[in-house]
Length: 310
Ligand code: NDP
Image 1 (tube, rainbow, N blue to C red):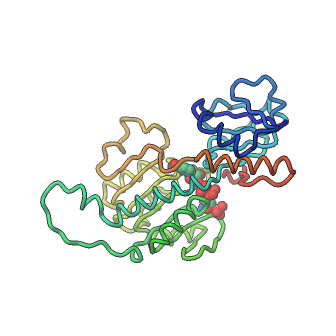
Image 2 (image 1 turned 120 degrees about the vertical axis):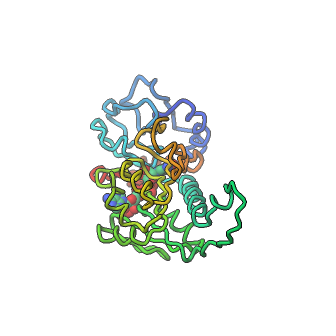
Image 3 (image 1 turned 135 degrees about the horizontal axis):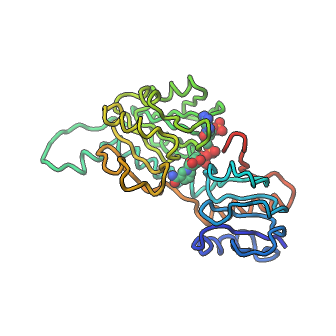
């Protein structure tokens, strides 16, 4: 019997029970919903939602892996009680949703949809937008999500560059790494997309110095994590006109407090951490594949490098 401990918000079990059962098969598997299970030492795998109740992994002495439902692991990676291997979520549905959100937001600014749709006075200004091939978009973070977005934008002919920790070669994308590479990516970015994980190295990566390296009037899209941006520096750059607009999906504190200046700022669009989410059908197949690997002694997919923090 393979025992799976499912630690998530109660409504998540309603979404996941059927896809997980169909991905794992009905025989030889038992599910135990957190927080009720008297024999943690009998658990083989933990399915982990950061919003679930589990904080102390110590009692799960025989668990072969913790399988996270989220792509971002900043809330668990430094948990000192976690000694088991940690796999993060890489889900085709999550990538597809993120590519749709980022493409939609890029097209909003590229086509000037706000000016043309939200106009309040009769004005006739026939300024056609440039072609996508003449619009430079940079993506910081070329992982599962960054690459999906880079491909979607490149397929629409946008002039796409990206930045990652390790050098990469991706068809149709200018790939940069290192500090000098970051400067090159920023200097050309009319639209900048943040899809980095939040780690000690990436916190405040977009500070006043980096904001000043962007072309004047650049647009920021942040579906990554709130801590990637120095909020005070961004507000100052918006007020000075250095940054034209920021569409922010993630924040240091969520929900974004009602008194936060982002809500009322005319150059900020707030979305409530909805850029994408893990989809139960495709995510269950990923979880099942990792459990199959664990049972066969094969290496897990998408293991988190705890030293690197992602
Ligand atoms: P990955 O781990 O697949 O990719 C992370 C990318 O960031 C990699 O390209 C990595 O480089 C790069 N990176 C990490 N550290 C650095 C650094 N110090 N300098 C330069 N590049 C760095 O993550 P995903 O693409 O799956 O997810 C990215 C983030 O998106 C998540 O961590 C999460 O915070 C956020 N997210 C937001 C959602 C939302 O709804 N708003 C939904 C899901 C995720 P390398 O390739 O060299 O390792």
